[in-house]
Amino acid sequence: MLAAVYEGPDQLNLKTVSDPQVTDDSAILRVESVAVCGSDLRILHHGNPRVVPPAIIGHEIAGVVVAAGRSVTRVKEGDRVALGADVPCGQCRWCRDGLGNNCAVNYAIGYQIPGGFAQYMRLPRLVLEEGPVTPFSNSVSFDEAALAEPLACAINGLELALMGLGKSVAIIGLGPIGCMMIDLARVMGATRVIAAQRSKLRMEIAKTYGADVYIATEEEDVVARCREETGGEGPDIVVTTCGSVEAHEQAIAMVAHRGCVNLFGGLGKDARPMSVLSNTIHYKECFVTGSHGSVPRQHELAVRLIENKMVRVSPLITHTFPLSKIHDAFQTMETRAGMKIVVHPQE
Image (cartoon, rainbow, N blue to C red; front, side, top):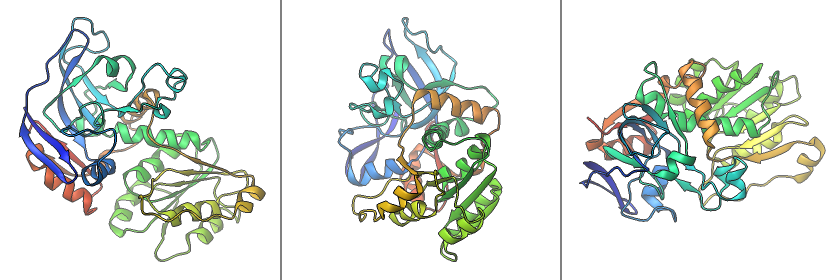
């Protein structure tokens, strides 16, 4: 089969490799769609301790089961399934408590487990027993189903931010996650959604998601405007869906008393430390949390939200490429020329 093989920093090479073979306790997935994630770019350029070259990365995946071992009961041949990234080990306290994304081993598809930038991939026993493997109906395209993985991460972020009925939400950063969160916040009960963004290209796509307020962060004081839009109180929930330390600081400055900040977007290793007056948190009695990844429950929920058209993901898919054009796909992601970039290994 054809695969894009990561062989070290800045080395992603198209190769013909052996087809994965089914065993009694595994299944084979024909990969139809795999979206490029920012973490794929980080692995390509900087590596990752959990990715040992040569490796096949890619974790936002949807495809069709083409073979299932005799002991496999979770999937069957012909099933259309979407995959998440984080796979619980099933043994530690975090995984037993349903918090596998906090597992110390931190298994993940496209990391220790070969991923989706290939025509086929094997779903091993651990993935089938513990992991995010979610069937979906014919009403959902493979491209849409692949985006259940980032949507599951968005669900994790808003759950940790104590999202609930009647709350106001500010989202700073309107990339794919930020746009998903506009719809998701509505689903989870938000009565006012404020969306802030620097890039004009992404702002135009984000406007199709119908937030109540859009703020161009290069043209306005985002903290002052968010307070103004919430009667001077500040938003109940602020989510930073961008990799900006300034946005993290602004989030804490603007959040309402007893509100919650979710630091969703990770920062680069060269980012300066966040500078926050701790008295701000002290006197507001606000909550500051981070989030990363998701758990299988959230991935299944993400698929159902997409199936029921409660969260729209198709407007975010701006570019598609065959696997033979994987370098073009990564370059398009790198230059932020689009939103979600999807690779089709079977083309």
